[in-house]
Image (cartoon, rainbow, N blue to C red; front, side, top):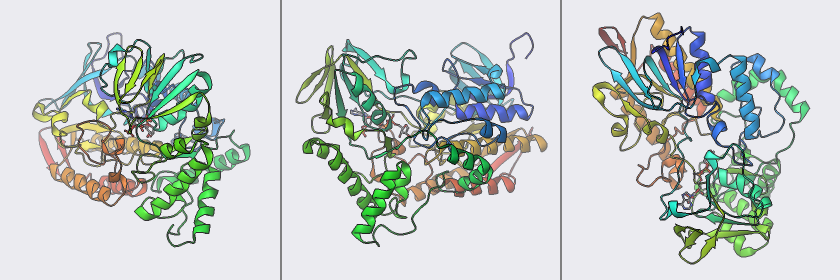
Length: 542
Ligand code: NA7
């Protein structure tokens, strides 16, 4: 950029989290002019916003990191098995410094609209700061869990105390000492923040609608021997991880949970429970595939809850029953269930007695009123589509993405959308991103997109766009694979059930990270099969 602010870019990237930062790095290496717009005051995306106490990744730190730079992965030192939010944020800042990324990012700027101009084959991009720029390519690195959700409770704005959302936590932190606090929500965010607030608050009320399955994290300082072993074989390890179902290497027991004796089953679950973390799901080969097998794992977790929580009625209320284990993302906790043994913690079952309204002084359920100084919403996100719909995206003939996706998202590979040329989504609906280690998917998407842009340049092509037929086939395939899983049995954000009125569609692709990668590679190798490629003035489909 010269002295005048540039208004034409090769690419605009929306978002400066894990996806946007790596996308910027790759496109700059191709020599493209790039501008990143980021709504937050600084980089980090998920790890910028989710600053609530106890926020950690549920994938272990040696896996939840970039693999694209050998030097980076060798020089960075994680301190714990599961990294905290501040540590992941400092890692991303280190990455930004190391690859000099900041200069192309404009913070505190939200993209409000982007419209495709068929005359010039360019996107016009508008921001809330009043900028109007144009770009050949637009890459949505907006994240699948970034648009926060606060339920539309009656009286929401009348509450006079402090109202917080886990994903919009004040940077200066919050001191709950001496306060009566209510937490609404018991998903991953709730189960992480609840034990910590309980240690500070005079009283904590946990408003639980659906009990969650949670396995212990068994977090610990990173073992230096493990770290050096991993670093010695990192390249090979990462290569193998990319081929797995979930982007992480897990020892999957090849046996069925139903073929072994009850004693062997119990021993196997207990062993994984002791190790901690999500590999509990791989205790048997069919835990995530067969309802009866799944029930044996679910019952094991319930037995652990009963063994941990002293009050039998509270323990029963904490036991999930109405969905298979793992079909809502399994939680990974540190002393979550134990927290309910504290005298200053009360579990409020809002399934039995729903929240009717917020009042100036607290929360009123159907059967009781709770006086509170602070309400923490751990109520999650409008996943996958929320952040995209917050932008007015218009493709050919000013067709709006929101209208196109009214009955559920439609894309080709979760990367590209018919009628929206040169627009890419990273971890978009129809991609496997959130099943397992998101970073593996993010790197794969970014590399696929940058290879695609390289291909267009080398072949002097101006536009790439998914064909309607390829999109239809992908949407059917995603749906067909979803139908073979247990995921549709839960009311989760995976399936849009947490947002009133949202179409019930399994948003991520459940066919596995490794298989998906192979498909994407094959499509590219065949000259971008299923896409229409346009040389200025002419078009041809492959
Ligand atoms: P989640 O997993 O969507 O959890 C949200 C929680 O909030 C969940 O327990 C919900 O209960 C509860 N909730 C939502 N709306 C209400 C209302 N109206 N009343 C009572 N309770 C409500 O969000 P998280 O932030 O915890 O985690 C999201 C992902 O981030 C996580 O899966 C990881 O991948 C990282 P419900 O189950 O809907 O009955």
